[in-house]
Image (tube, rainbow, N blue to C red):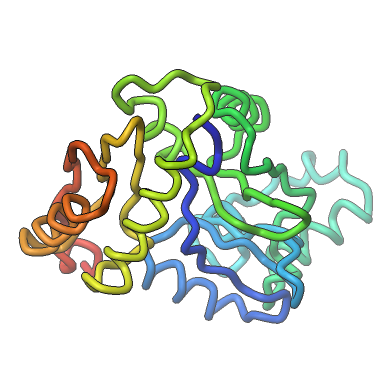
Length: 231
C-alpha cells in the first residue's frame, strides 16, 4: 500500500496571513492537531502544529529557558525563537522545511520518515501541489488492514472505491470527512475514526455497503459524543 491508499484528502489548510487565533479555532473546531500552510498555488510553505502553540509565550505551560541555556544561542537564534513565540500569523509561527512524500510512497518508507524525523504527519505532494496528508493514525490503519502487504501497490479499483466512498459519506451522508478514514484492500473496506452517534456509524456502514466493488465492510468507527470535546 502507498500514501494514496491511506491519506486524508479533505485537508484543512491556512494561508501565511492567517492569524494565530483563527488557526487555533480551526484546529479545535475540526479536532485536528496540525494544519498545512499553503500559498495561492497549493504549494506547501510550512505546517502549524500543536507543538508550535505549546512553545508560545502566551501559553502558561510553555517552557522558559534558563539564562545559562541562552548563553549557548546566538542573537539570530534568539530572534528566531522570539518570532516563533510571539508571532501573530501562520508565516511567523509555522515550522518550515516540511518533510513530504508523494502519492506512490510506500507505507514502510513513510513510517521510517516519521520515526527518523520525530514527526506525527507528512503532507502528500504530487506535481508540487498538496493532495493529502498521512498521519500516524492513517499509517496504522493501512498497516492493520487485512491482507495488507507493506509496500505492495494498491489496485486502481480499490482507490476508486475509496474515492467514491469518501464522496458518498461526506457529500451525501453528511459525515465529517475530517473525522474518519477509509482503507480499501482487495475490495474489503475498513472504516476508522470517530463519529458522534450510532446513526452516523450506521450511515457510514450503509454508504460503504452500497459502493460498487465493495466485497465486505469492517466498521471500526468509535462513538465519541460532541460534548466530550467541548468540556
